[in-house]
Length: 346
Ligand code: DAH
Image 1 (cartoon, rainbow, N blue to C red):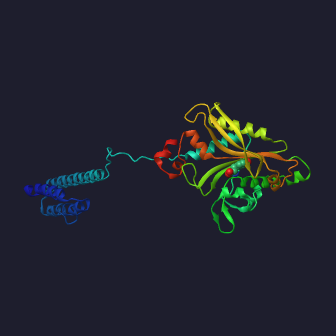
Image 2 (cartoon, rainbow, N blue to C red):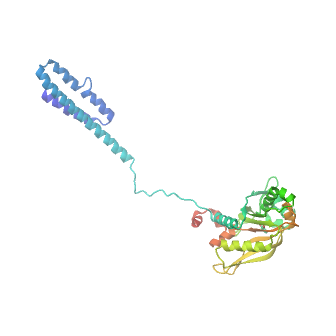
Image 3 (spheres, rainbow, N blue to C red):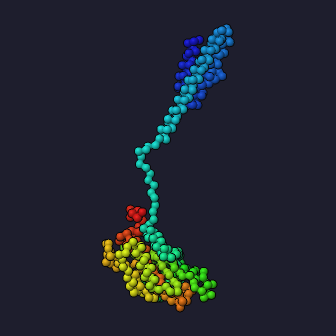
């Protein structure tokens, strides 16, 4: 029985070793430790022995059982660590692979300019108004003293959409839209003959015209400015616009020229040119805005009496300002969407 019983342990070890999965192993276990397994069989054999032999053999069988259980546990542990090893292999990270870069976005150079314009004018007491890009003929032209068949309309060819609407050719309609709202809000005070709080606003946004070359795009940006009160004059325009340019370009080395011009909605009107004393553009006059004293007819269309209220307006080109500030010579670069160009402004 000894040789036989020692074999049991060796057989069990071999069988456990042959089991390749935990499930196999549990099945094999039954052959040795189960109800009809080898150990149970050996136990049954004890009944025919004398009491002393029973004791001796019983102890031996128990030792075998313990040895088999240990072998089983050892195999369980081995299978478990093999599984863990396989899992670690499968989930392993190759830390030598290049990382995935997370690109951070940034603002478009023209947006940076618009933000800058808003900050500077905010600091001078101007609020910011937004308005529709699809306009009516009234706000875009007629209310701005540019009636049907006025020759000034021919310079504002644009995209007309159904229902008599058009893509606004400038931000000037916002003068009327904003002023009308403002006047409405202070109607009661005005009717009592009280002084209305001044209108001091800028209106940046997209504008459209049938134009396309290195310095013109069918979609471009403008920023309107409007300051209306009882005593707002051309002198205030000069101070405000000159201060703006010096802050915007971070330079005292520039001169502004208010060159007489014509716009239907201002009288007198001026084109504003800028000249830098230094830098690549030094000495050249560059046009940056149209401006003027708001025309009495426009004041009237705002719902105000031109005898009492007056002010100035201007319309500048943020795209142009961006080109000047960063030294870009082709406007189309701003709208091509090429990241190699745009990412330089982050
Ligand atoms: N709206 C004009 C344009 O697009 C620019 C302009 C001129 C705006 C004079 C004004 C102004 O407010 O007073 O050509």
